Length: 225
View (cartoon, rainbow, N blue to C red):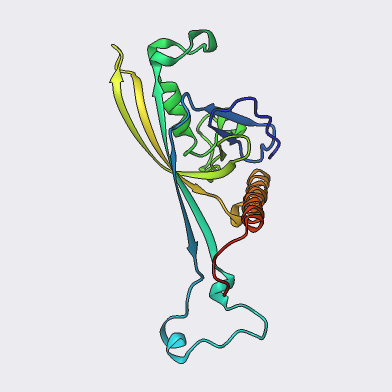
């Protein structure tokens, strides 16, 4: 399971610094498990011929090969997760955070996952160096139980702050996180993504086979083709 020892049943984000898998990680457990999440799974076909090529008709593929658009087809999956934060439910015995900041540190930690990771060079910089290329964003895994660890890219955060303390720091908020599941292009260069995707695929096929075996054993009154 991508080298992660899970000792909790809460959902969480786990973030790896670029090149830091499997040791350099940050864990952001959700204070409350969301009551649900919305998943969207869509098939994306390859690009079809256009213009003159389309008018003439694309050349047929060699014998035994699938059409180019079928071969290039991929499945894209996305999530929407509602994350609820409430300062009143924080256990003082389990935190060293200064209470004057409310839940602002937790919100900032989630927001930080959308920004380029800070490198050792950034920390030692005095600001006088030539402009460097931005660092890549951390690799983020959505942990949803012990059997579902999903590599994701956070595409947007809708943060609804609903209550503040006397310093105007938020003490209650809901975050709607839109997540895009990473795919093969990212997996080629990232071991964390590769491992998570392999486990997800194996688990999906395992569950599907369990269902097929169950329905086969039951028999059926469905008309055969």
